[in-house]
Length: 115
Length: 301
Image 1: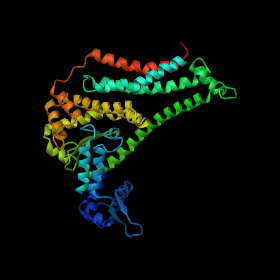
Image 2: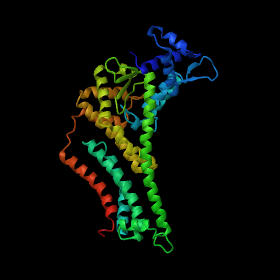
Image 3: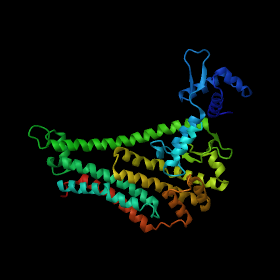
Image 4: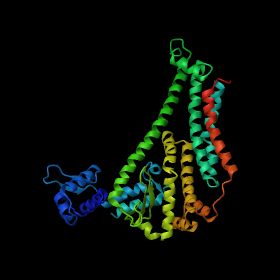
């Protein structure tokens, strides 16, 4: 039994790989081995949309879903929390090495640049 | 009441600069980081109380011999009616004092709320970006070359995040040491301990005391997490994990990291009961002094 979280990750992996976006039916097809119901795919997509990970254009039928940002951009967002760019970092996460320094910032920039 | 107001002002001044400076300078000498942390909490609370108390006591002084009488006089509007005993300057000070108090409380609530929101967003990102570790479902692996490790506090299941860069950099034992250090942060609720200091700094930007407090407390919680971790894993593993992850591009180490390594090279310092009792007593006393002075002002003098 797969959790919703794992499905969300698999769907995002698909969308990051597909430049033109995918419809719910196409996503379901690519999961043929898992025998997913179309409603499950829709549930996952609407969850991802609410979290602003995917977008769809208005007036397109059937809806084509696209990744809102690249995987690298999201990793950079995660890292900026982890490396202390977030204003209330200590309250949000505790990290192995204490305070921020310039190297962290340089590292972040490199991460973003190499994406 | 004026004497009390003056004494409170002196206390506020001491706690705004000389006392935090002295404690900040000693942050890397203590054998008892926990007692220092309590002392910092007390300095923040006491300093705030003394400052607000001084302003309110001064503002209300003409209204009565003690605080309850003055507050009653204020409530009955006797002070504000024509020919009342409350001059405009004191009224303005009273409002400012109360506004600062409200501001501090709001900032504390706001910091907690923001942290909650950011944590939720972070959790959502982790869901789509990381995979659970094969050995430990509470550890998640982030595929990126940078060596990072951190933990995400939460009410339910705590999550430790390790990057593939870190995993490939460290051996199995060092990795366990890192996880122990992170888990210690969670177990000791360091995220909650930080909140008042974040709120204090946000409410008083540019002031020395909150800045020194935050910098000191940041270092102290790292030391406490190291101390907790080395009770469970070999000290050398933790030390080499820090060495490997902390080395900057030029190979230089930050002073606080160097101090942690130095502390890890010596046996765990024994905390003497006397030191701890003295420091905790100082913290309690520091908090009680302005409290008693504000509540009891005019009753004894």
